[in-house]
Length: 257
Picture 1: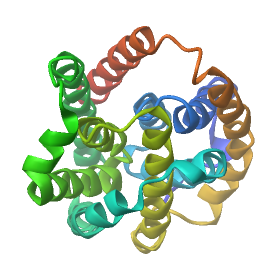
Picture 2: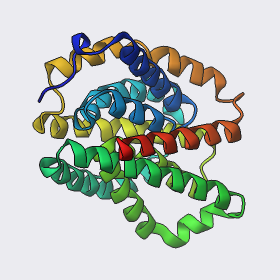
Picture 3: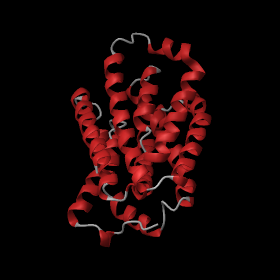
């Protein structure tokens, strides 16, 4: 795979990737799903197919920091209920990446971003009307876990974009902020680490991509620290509006590129 290295990236492009890495750290400890903006930046600066492999180790660094921050708040019964369906989604996503070329992957990432933006808008409009999220989760039970799990596994494998899917599932299950962040942290650490052999087998991760990851990983830490500080202070509604807008712009940019 002709992955990007530091020598192929301009100063402005590296700055954009560094900002995206910082945003990954912030999203992992403050607003899950905000890294869809990072996905758009990586796919715009790097070849779309290669960007998924370069971004994956950056996400894992953020996941480790999130687990260290919120490890006491994870809800393991929810995680065990999701993992089988997520595994199936990851396999489907891997098969898709085996035959999809860069143009198809770019278009798919753009479409997924727009879908995730639509999901986020729908979630915002229905969250206030859902007065009993726990009863909703109980009624839908395993069927909901399977549908969200497969979609989350596929989107995270193809585009590292499983965050909004899992966010909607956890919110619909009635999770409060700390439980949400703790469960999400362990979920994505386990899922993203399990994706490494698949991505390496597809040639999406190699020594050159890891060299770029090493340079970018340092930017994840301040983002995570800022997220930890801001989680109880941030205006969630305004930030979600900005994330949705940026996601739409990123998705359109990839589709029209």
